[in-house]
Amino acid sequence: MAEDLLRDFDPFDIFDTEAARLDRFFSGLDEEGWRRPSRAAGWTVRDVLGHLAGEELYNQTCLDGTLPELRELMESQGISGYDEFNEWCVRERRGVPVAEVLEEWRTKNGDTRARMRELGPYATLETMAGPYPVGKQTFHYDSEYATHADDVGAPVSDEEAEGRTLWRAAVGRFALAGRGADVQVEPTAEQIWAHAGGASASLSYPEFVAATVGRLPETHPLDQRLVSALRCLA
Image (cartoon, rainbow, N blue to C red; front, side, top):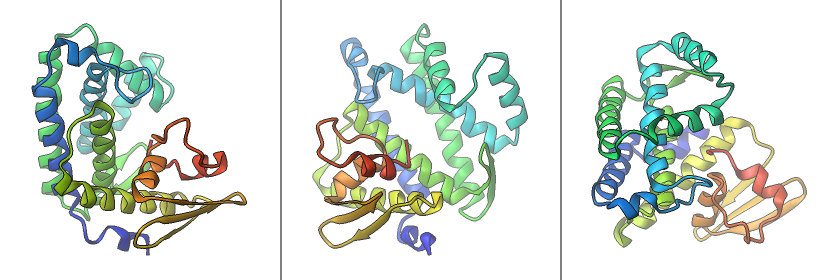
């Protein structure tokens, strides 16, 4: 079962760890650091913070059970999809002092993490995609935070790198299975074989993670059929 891929990991502990990583990194930035381009296309490091702060509107709406109100807000702003929502969140915060945006994100995300943990993994959360278990939704947030931590260059110690890659690969495999994606993934101890659309390739675990979150370098030789089939978390 797809759920078995995640049984060895605690989504709430991971969420706390990745949030703390981002907080440490953001807290040490100077003006130049905030202006630096991130790995997220078109966004500076400051924009990534704005995205994370704005994303809490969605996260807390799910917790509060007020999705109709969020849909009304999006309609009033001419927002028709998730990508447009993300860009709107970033634009809304570009004129706000960065210290205020950081405090907004820190406070609201702390509340989100506490409430998700209190609900527990088997409670149900209302999301834009319908009811979804809290634990599984938290794994999606984990992946989002780890991806953006890498986008801005937040440090990962050598001691935690391997374990971090393993849980991220497991979440990627879980997401692919949940989407019913037309791709086969066969892990071994050292690599992951992927097959889709008549194409096959062997990827290292870090490469597989990068593929699932749409962060493979443009110069990577992976067949485009596999690039499209493996992207499931971004």
